[in-house]
Image 1 (cartoon, one colour):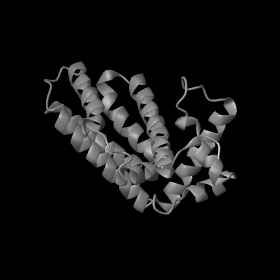
Image 2 (cartoon, one colour; image 1 turned 90 degrees about the vertical axis):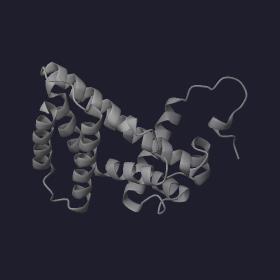
Image 3 (cartoon, helix red, strand yellow; image 1 turned 30 degrees about the horizontal axis):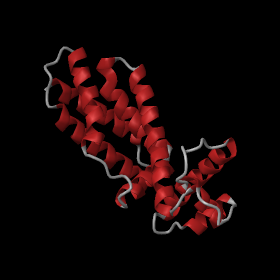
Image 4 (cartoon, helix red, strand yellow; image 1 turned 90 degrees about the horizontal axis):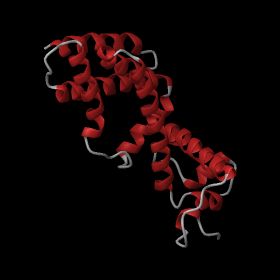
Length: 200
């Protein structure tokens, strides 16, 4: 079998060709779809290969294992989420940053249910582990900046961020269980609660 690109130990790591980047992207998209639909345990390298229309050996050329492929798929999903939220929050007035964060986070996860399920599956299998402040830290910074812009004495941004993060998780989880659940109204209710919390 041909040596995998990521196992090459001689010389500097070469840049991927257009075809290799496209193939890796296809494998990541197939992984997201299958993990979202079948769960981590219900997804195999053979299944990913079949879904992508290539051989298992071809998958192994690009990724050394299912875990490595799932990690990259999780990173892809997380990167897309972070990029979207950062763009929306960056375009908002600083004082409205927390509201923009809540609306965009819930909206993105509502509109991309497979990404949401991929995140849940990756985190439940250890691929999404990270320091807890990686989750609440950015929101706490947005909250602190909003308090300053509103002329409000800085409060406990960490606790507010943790509570808001938990509320977002619960709203998104409810949408996964009940596709008819109105996340737009839920997001607006959470925005109202955050506005009150920022003034405390």
